[in-house]
Amino acid sequence: MRILVTGSKGQLGNEIRVLAEDYPDFDFLYTDVDELDITDRQMIEAYFVDNKPQAIINCAAFTAVDRAETDEITANLINAKAVENLAKSAASFDALLVHISTDYVFDGKSYLPYDESDKTNPQSAYGRTKLAGEEAVTQYASKAVIIRTSWLYSAFGNNFVKTMIKYGIERNELSVVYDQVGTPTYAKDLAKAILDIIPSAVQKSGIDLFHYSNEGVASWYDFARTVIALSGISCDIKPILTKDYPLPAPRPCFSVLNKSKIKEIYKIKIPYWIDSVKDCIQRLE
Ligand SMILES: NC(=O)c1ccc[n+]([C@@H]2O[C@H](COP(=O)([O-])OP(=O)(O)OC[C@H]3O[C@@H](n4cnc5c(N)ncnc54)[C@H](OP(=O)(O)O)[C@@H]3O)[C@@H](O)[C@H]2O)c1
Image (cartoon, rainbow, N blue to C red):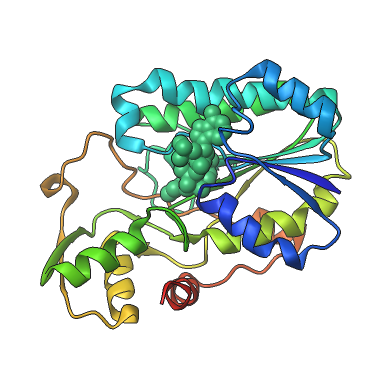
């Protein structure tokens, strides 16, 4: 099967590249903005005509959550308008579109893990643009899987794990919020889940929405403490409130996702978040 990976130089795209050798039946076409700018409708059409992918994993996104507050137009272009381009081309070539979305589509006011059917109510520009991307997939694709995930980290790019290790080495003390609760997601685990479900998903038609994160629940404070402890770094982590660490974009204070649907339908096993943080730190070492 020929699989186009867009935004393949990001965290998720790179983890797909690492896993690719375990999937010899897949022929991967890796692109990022230089080879295939997903905001360019004509470029996408031409790419599909030349390469005829049977599935697309859209890892491309505008992920600078705070910058999106002051540049919602660009965020919307990449997170929504470009997704419409991909959805339209995928539909005209009868290809499966796997699109990644976010816990930021929720307002974070729940205290129970979010189901796929729960009401969305994004509080940030990033969340609004990602929700618009989901809507574009629903409206224009004929065969698609939308996967919402949360707190993504990996061995690649900039992410919370790498930031905590860097600052943990440089400083004696770090302050991290404990009143935002969710679940970290290891991009390698998400990449594996995506590649495992593609052979079945490609046989189906229609649009399916799933939640995927690692198992368990943590605050950013717990996440930071775990990273520091597993890295063998000596640094004090202090719990603070979100109000004492103001950022431009509001974050959902609760964004635990219920993964029952993807586990039941695709029979996948999801690792516990601390086990996955361990794996990532071992790779970084
Ligand atoms: N990171 C998180 O915590 C998180 C949480 C929940 C959901 N998600 C979602 O998970 C998915 C993967 O996230 P990630 O962390 O792997 O993202 P990432 O590391 O930021 O990678 C995104 C990639 O897309 C590229 N890109 C940007 N504009 C493009 C365009 N017009 N055409 C083609 N490629 C373009 C980026 O290039 P440049 O770097 O040059 O811009 C980058 O290589 C995204 O949909 C994101 O919204 C992420």
